[in-house]
Length: 35
Image 1 (cartoon, rainbow, N blue to C red):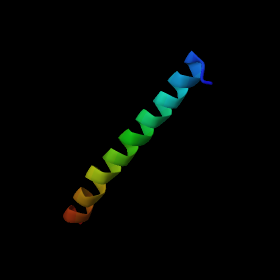
Image 2 (cartoon, rainbow, N blue to C red):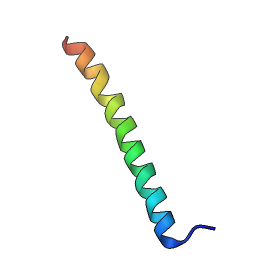
Image 3 (tube, rainbow, N blue to C red):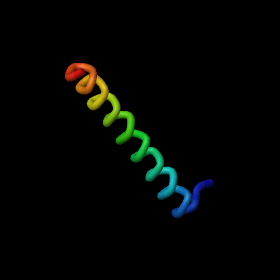
């Protein structure tokens, strides 16, 4: 069972992971197009 701090940590990790994946998805095709 997760306590509050564990839930916050998991949420932060998932949010960061999602942001990184989204950023890579947007950024890499853009750089390929330029070069």
